[in-house]
Length: 355
Image (cartoon, rainbow, N blue to C red):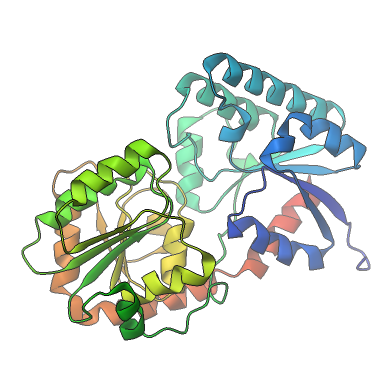
């Protein structure tokens, strides 16, 4: 233990394979923050585990595993158990922190229960974390009763060096069997309803020039997979790779593309955008959530998801400025390097010790 530093033991729940949690934990440990985690299978005994292991802080992340079940009754039971766990934690003197990756469940399952769950966590938490000031404002606007002093804005770290990044654009294009002389748009990550993939395909199909679109990621369900398959059927200039992209293959897609597109219908925080910036790629993003906070006009093209044709216009602007896309990517890379996990960990550790 460092002299004069109050060590903390923190239980992270739920703990996913998302590198965000692992990278933050790695930087917290040198600051005398001992991190343990709970997989989704252990959420029912959250308070028991915390009390038994003398945990001082429970740090919540995504809330949907706490209230989404296989049926309405199962979801109600799951939420009731979660609420009981939170009350026990409070009564036991354990501090509760919630990082708001999204305000609402993206799949919009059980919206009433979702609203109640979010309200309960906001009420019972000792501190709430967002990844930018815009997200903090959006949260406190929707839940006006939440004190702004309770919500802390802490930067999301970058992915520079986390993924392999040694392929040239030509090498990556050869692997994907893409012609390197054309503009290549990419959207990558788990394919979910809110991410607006059909809208992206429609906008791309309206472009005049001979360009390419790559859609890579595992569909969250069969319905979305089949819908995208129908949309891209017969389109030789759209590559659809409906599978989980392993860590070692991520560089293939990001090195091959010229622009990464995020056609999200709504978003709060996007680690995928920071991933694209970490690979030195310009982005097309909506003017929502943290996007305007982490990107600027020197590295991105923006669109309003509520305006018909705005996404297509952003794609066209990228084509018009094809010659400066590499420069825009380099600008984003410099911005990404400033988003350091060390800084995020220092702010998080400071918050823990203030509770």
